[in-house]
Image (cartoon, rainbow, N blue to C red; front, side):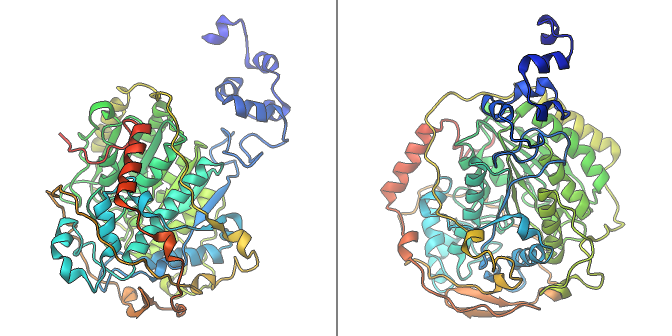
Length: 571
């Protein structure tokens, strides 16, 4: 309509009026799309660069591309070599060792050569307190297997001890996976297209309690970091469990939209009804897609693509956080869906196609050989690289027998999601999306300072050793800071949900525990021993004074009104 009023008969004439560079005219981008680009981006395009539109030109965020997956991305990857040493305990289904297995696959498939690899800097107390209560953070910092008998009241209060056990190095484990997610958000804010932290995605943790194997909600912390630069952030969750902790944190704001695809009905955490849509200014900005057992790739995508396409059109986020919980895969120990690895990765591929800064996080996943397969393949999807199905030999090769392939066939389990049910869910959610105003704006305000993590780029540290296939086994431990305590908060935690899941063990997952220093070292099949712990600078992890933490929280709330929606009780 605007083109007709301006007297421009066709796009070629508009191209001429705009003096578009040849690289733009030769691509399939329309002049109308060009007009929608930011002034800075248009200036960069007109300046030449000779790059095809959608390819990297100056290392900044990718431009709207000519095809869904025709463009290269600047991808960074966060990995702590110690992460696989942490051990929830014998028989517990959550095994951080799966992150080390994933990393080994990435190394042997040659994918690390296409990534910028970073070791995450541990999140500090004040970083964690941007969302979590300071006394809860102090509790996590002080609790240990040796002291837990003296803190039974606090254990019950913070829901720690059953599904969320106390283990050696618990606090540093939380600092590490949270640091990777926040560090990834910082990288996206400063020019990367995609950031990956498979150790993150622990979406059940609440402001003042652990839940569902999750202690610190790294997702909320990463979103708060992204909101410093982006008016709107989209959170998408494809874990089989509802992303309740993230939804609750942003339930009353329109700056964050949360979309969760999950099993619903007599299943942990019991939340995520399609009728839960947000509250106040956040009404219709929470979307829940309740699913039944046995959903397959075709049924899943019949919901995912139309819903997410409409979300991207209406909400227009500046950044996307995608939680890629692998317990929605077929054959998961705790799951009941029937997705293939390709079907699961299709969600990553689709969200990548919008060329919006994308943070990929892990999450659930309890058949660890399939978790490693999935996240390796999805790292390739993030890079735009198709990896071979035949798996190269590596230190965990025996986990993947007898076929030794990357992909596994889904089962023949019954799909209890009828076509009629799926159509009703899709229609209802699309109707909800039609009720929100397009791309809500944010009042101008001072931007909070960046979270400063002096991360070391492993590329710069030692390029020759970066691809050493056993490099992630040569690990140094860390000494933890002195245990301190704080005044506990006065709020009582009610309605605590405990994750009641089948805790049966896989034969491959029976590890012998070897404790050294402050961390529990696990002797896994096909794994080498790790080196002993070495002291680090304790002062860098020193506890903030309570007054400092509270002052920072108050200052952040003043700068980001309606942003930190922490403990809203749903009506």
